[in-house]
Length: 216
Image (cartoon, rainbow, N blue to C red; front, top):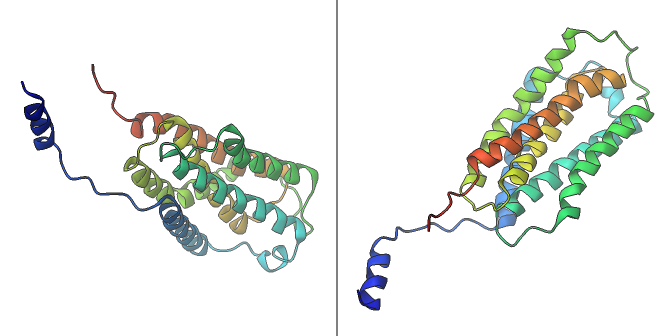
């Protein structure tokens, strides 16, 4: 077969491809959607009774600022990893996890001035984990849908950040709903579900975001 015929046969088999919007635009669009979903969900669940005092407490505000930072960094990392050549290396990947660990240190080392007295750990705390997962569900589905249209070369890492980002935002929303401030409750029923969801993202990323391999 002549070269011209080979080229013509290849061209005839092509289908039009719609170019995706820019990296910044897609990450900003998803960020706005996630914020709207979690804000609406938090409003629907109802704010904690001591919220007026909590938002004036520096410890509470610092912890929430850290969660918001993890949310933004993770979202940016997920969309960067979905574009070949945009990954900024291992250091950038560790920043969101470092922020989450710093949040854990703040919770362990300090106690909010507006905190209620510690209560015994019980299965009742499971309701916080359920609220967290519900708050992060719609942003997670939207994020995976957007990332599947791109071309992530590290699907596991991409899936990790795709669920760590809404998980940290849902964790923030849950803090505005739950008045419990004792560290054990926050680690067991707030932080662990968010980390478990992010770990699930690694598996889902490898299953849903991996590109099919071409056969020789």
